[in-house]
Length: 198
Image (cartoon, one colour):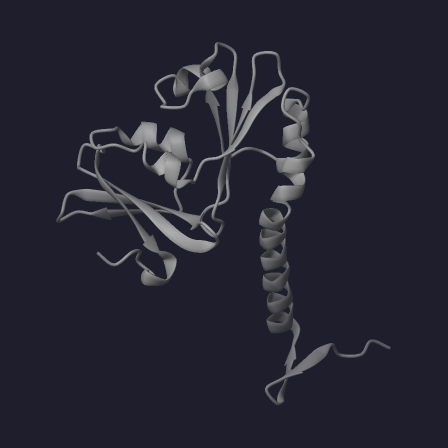
């Protein structure tokens, strides 16, 4: 005999799909939090000059984007990433996370650098006139892109942590030609559903 499956919530029984959806949502949330929460452990397991691309993918999965050396040659911090045959794997933790990783695989197939790129030091390298593609290669995929047609601007936003652990949002404002006009950082609490108040 099969008994009906139900739980009580707010004084009434919840059965079937509503209960299943709740568990599915909790499971998804756990997976997302687990992915970000496991990053320090994954990073600790990778040693520069020793770990291979296969090691990186085994711990981080498929990258959001793979940048070839020629793609990163114009960046302010290219290093090994710009050497012929090098590849940089982008691991994005946006929109909910506060980090983006760029992991460079040297021409010999070994990991040569693992950088968390959402830092005030990197934000300072974003200068007026810089093209959007270059900013994207420096900081990874943003959490949100918001076009403002009347202002002829597009805002790219990234979540990050400012020391010691203040959640903030870094915004790059592009003109209609997708060149940097200005940047700003605000506390995440100041932002609403549509982004930072301006």
